[in-house]
Length: 355
Image (cartoon, rainbow, N blue to C red):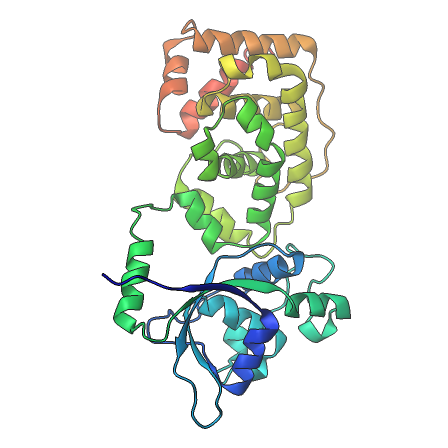
């Protein structure tokens, strides 16, 4: 039985640049995928390095040393896209197959306002040094590891049966404004999702709170929409490069949550914990505060007044739904797994019956 004696170490970005310069780094072994990252993903990655965030482990394989230059040789087993991105940003001339249309990018404003649009040479000296001195965590396979064994290792690493859900897939594909706004707003309320038991720890780990936040943003923009993954993904794509309504969306979302926290905190676990009921409560408060029908354009608007009488009425009708004292169609709307416009609207309007 073979025992895998991999070396665990760290290397700086500058180490990889030096190896690429002297030809001792093979960036594109046969078992590596070709470069497919979009500019947004590259921008997000460089910003992560600037901020000092950890990134996934890079895997290398030692090769027999070069007898002419005496230099050690290394294959990139996993991490080609990460390394190609950082090399292309810092010194594109080091890539023999550099293609401006494919490899050129700058940092986006949505990821880092201070350094947006700047090439590496235009960054302040301390930032450039910070990037060059960033340390990747690296596992190194010994030189006697052949390609079949490498594939065997990664087949074992990827055999957990874990399948990405739709929100995780969106998170991996998009890196622009809409995704950033949805993630930031969802993350602001992390302790509320937990405290109100809206999502379990596993659901939070699978980004369910980001998905419902995305749905609530679409409600603000277009009114009640059907919960379909292709609809959500379409708007992630449409607003990836630019999301003009992000500031007004952020302000309105925070206003609705403020009302929830100040006036509905005592009944959240009992009445509005279920996802259908939570969506309806948010929708009822939002409709009362701002109304619908904006067709994707939100002008600056002062929210309406939510009186204590309004709060009590929504609580009362929410309790009727939970206690199954509401009309049957409303009860059905609160319990169905599907989320159609008709059922969502019926539940929201019922909560607003007395307002």
